[in-house]
Amino acid sequence: MNAIKLSLYLLLISFFASAQTGLNFDGNDDYMSSASTGVSGASERTIEAWIRTTANAIPGQGGQRVIANWGSMTLGMRYTFCVLWNNAIRIEIGGTGLSGNIAVNDGQWHHVAATYKSGLVQLFVDGVLDTSGNISGVNTSSGSFMVGRRVDGVNHFEGDIDELRVWDIALNSSQLSVRDSSEYCNSPSNLIAYYKYNEGVASANNSTISTAIDHSNNANNGTLHNFGLNGSASNYISSPVLGAGLNLSETITSCGSYTAVNGITYTQSGQYQDTILDPNGCDTILDLNLTVINVDSSAQRISANTLEANEADTAASFQWLNCASNFQVIGGATGKQFTFVQNGSYAVEVSLNGCVDTSACIVINNVGLIETRAQELEVYPSPTHQNLNLIYPPGPGVLNVLNADGRVLLREKIDPQGKMELSLGELPQGIYHLQLLQEQGQAQLLVQKL
Figure 1 (cartoon, helix red, strand yellow):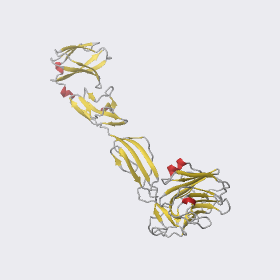
Figure 2: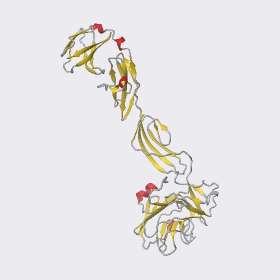
Figure 3: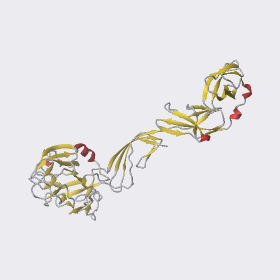
Figure 4: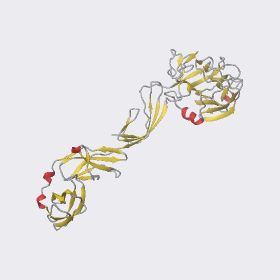
């Protein structure tokens, strides 16, 4: 069976359960440092992450909670992504900044992002633009990359962080809405720092872990500082990303059963979803829209000289084949039924909605035994240029004229009186089979047209 794949994605799948995790910061001294240089100068950039917090970050009530930053404390040279005024996200440039309006300290997971390009800052919460504005004087220095506290060691984050990414381009809203819900199995271009925080097991003893892997091509792994790494706080926690390395959508039309990339074989049309687990914590959600076309390619002998295909769909087409001649096409034999005139081995090729399948060969070896009444059919003259005179036992019936491949070229009702004249004027020169079919039996003779 062959599958017609309208949209096909090729994946190398390994079935190993690996749950996704994030990292909880206790708000006191937990942080991660990295050798990543971030984005320097006034170059465009994007920073994004999943966060969950209940901390009050309003100045005088709790204070700034830093998600990530890099640079130096020199005016204009620090680039800080944090939660501050309104308990909303903020980009702070060291001396100035832009704050959002949507509070994110409701204890729910939120995807937060900030882009910068040519002085314009845009802040996004859950894929929606919160606010935008221009900031001047940006001249970020490189290095001192920190997650969970400011570069000068204060304003620790209290809550959970996952999927922290830094890009050296400013992503637009549509790009963010597509990318925010999934992990990347392979680092895309322009992704210069990427921390999945999948190294541990949620709420388990992870005390042997001290490194957070940078999954970007820069491979600037982070170092974890002061985390307890055991229990429900200051440790790895369950991720909001739900293990989706990517969302794989396939629309498949399959000729017969279909085995998907997750190893499951489907036999019926429908919409299916499954999770494909990856040992590197980069799972895939498979959305499969499947149409299964089952072709009945079987055939059977229904009378002394007739074979019939069993496919009942009226949209199907047929082509009869000569098995003994390497499945050579029998010219003109394209009906659901096929009338043969000689012993042989025959099969039918059935086509339905783009799917093609071939029946088993049906062996015919008793044609000579069926022709018991040939002496009762008289034909003259033979050979003939045009007309034949036929004499046969009285009674109703049908006369077929077939070529050597068994194709019916002419079919006429016979005169029940036992005599008739048949014109071969439309047929080219050649040898033809005359097949007389009556209730009491049948007869066949060869005639030649000159």
